[in-house]
Length: 408
Ligand SMILES: *Cc1c(COP(=O)(O)O)cnc(C)c1O
Image 1 (cartoon, rainbow, N blue to C red):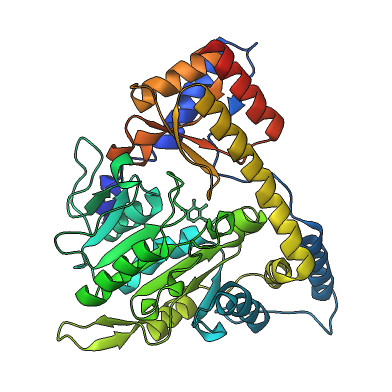
Image 2 (cartoon, rainbow, N blue to C red):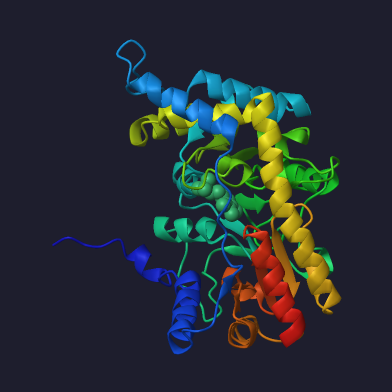
């Protein structure tokens, strides 16, 4: 008899986005004449840029040439890409990271989800609340938690509430935590962490022999140069942090798929006797066993992001989304809402005027046909908040704001 992995049965089957879809579909079928504007998506809308496309096309042509055809590449990623990443994303900002510390992958969703498997099931994990659901669900699947309670929280996970009072920054765990997921700039709140804040985390992690799992998927949206783009801008972080980055939001690669993870050589976890074990070879063993690398044309396309032309084009993409964020912030503030985020991140974290997140969702859908994401869907501390994404088209963003200003 084949037994199922019962940990999967603890998951509330993809609650948030299917529920949004269901409510939007029900409204649309009852009101076929109404035009719905979607500001809920966490996906980019602008196409790949010319420098990226040129490199992508050229690499595809190489694959058609018997002399230049490529089969399996290195599981860790081609050196040309890892070297470009090390130089441009890290060494240029004073971070002591080399190409050998980097693993190229097909996404940060996979990396943030897979990484937990090189750690013991006995580890206590800590996450922010609200949170990107991948960190939690993959630990549930692995069996690192108990059941879910009525508020949606799992037994055994340490939730760190991120509230308006603390600037949506999590507080250091008071009890045991061994693996801490941090995401800055944050999805969904748009919050960022200063050097000082990250330094307190690095100190805490080193004292507790804990590891920070730092998701920097939105680092390219930072507009103030004093805010760190990488955890490795903090001295000592090489000894306690793994970092995830992705070309998805930075360069429009959500459908193209390329990301990378930094597991610094010499970063230690411990065996039961307290002996340090280097994690880099362990993650390398995991990747070489379960992963066969990202396609050559995609890695060539990603490397083009670091050329002069590529960099300029990608800054243009981000500027377009941040213009939407500015419009959202200004218009919503003018309507009397308290608005967070949207300055260093493509997400606006709006405080509803006392309404529950789902009530607010229904009101917006029914009155003005605008769709966003209920904050409570990201965790209990998100109740009373609502996320607008800046990834839509500008004309749609303006139309949505006009409708809200008129009908609300
Ligand atoms: C979009 C996003 C990612 C990127 O995921 P990919 O799999 O690389 O597309 C990672 N983390 C967060 C929090 C995100 O919102």
